[in-house]
Image: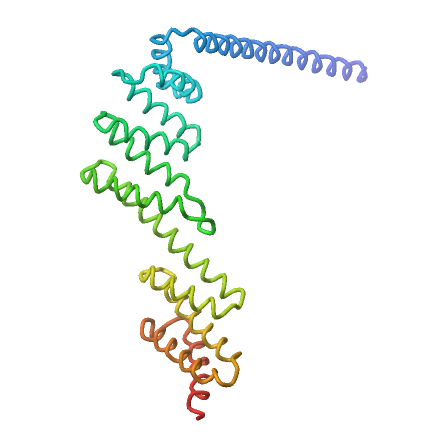
Amino acid sequence: MRHNIGVKIVFIYVNALFLIMKRVSLFVLIVIAIIAASCSGFDKLLKSRDYPLMYKEGLKYYEEGDHYRYTTIFEQLSPVYKGTAQADTIEFYLSQGYYHQGDFLLAAHYFDRFRQNYPRSSFIEEAEYMYAYCFYKSSPRPLLDQEATKNAISALSEFITRYPNSSKKAEVNTILTELRSKLVEKSYLSAKLYYDMQDYKSAITALKNSAYEFPDSEYREDILYMILESSYNLADNSVPEKRRERFQATLDEYYNLMGEFPETKYKREAERIYASSIKVVENK
């Protein structure tokens, strides 16, 4: 009796599963058919040469956020509508299409072309902003090359100068602060690399350059200490005729650190370096 009940339960389960799979398969087929029909209609539109209809559908796809389709349409319409009243709309939306598909450098190129060709367009302020913003979106993490970051800072600064009353002013200033911090971090990490490699002579040069270029760096205390320690290690490993001169330079770096940060977190290490260095300098 129990065996028969178990068989019936299994049969009911399998049958229910079959019906679910059948319905899912039917749904998937319907979705595929809709997509296929839609794609077929889009392909026909591209081949139609009915430019007013393509323009109308392109605007519709733009409003719907179908970035691939309106970009594809406006790519074809760009040379056709050149010199017409619709030209700036097509070029602006084409630039937007590349941006929304994540190709920020290509979008920057098109926004730049737009601002050169349509300086009186109603889209010009937005295009100027997007040109700069594309570089911001292309800015990599601090360890990598920061050319895009510098381009973004330059373009955003130019935007604020040109549109001082822009509604985006606060946002731009926030972005500029973020980008400048990234340059500060890049400079610090690049200089610190020599310190970590124990290439103390190169470290001193790189760290001093970083401190000079970014005097308000959040890493300034760390930089001044690393200069001090690098100077000490360079002196300690020098040939006899250069030791006294280099230990004197180490004392100068000690005074620099303590002058700016008298309660530095590196005070114990700094005092040890000072004590060792003063012995060499005073031992004439």
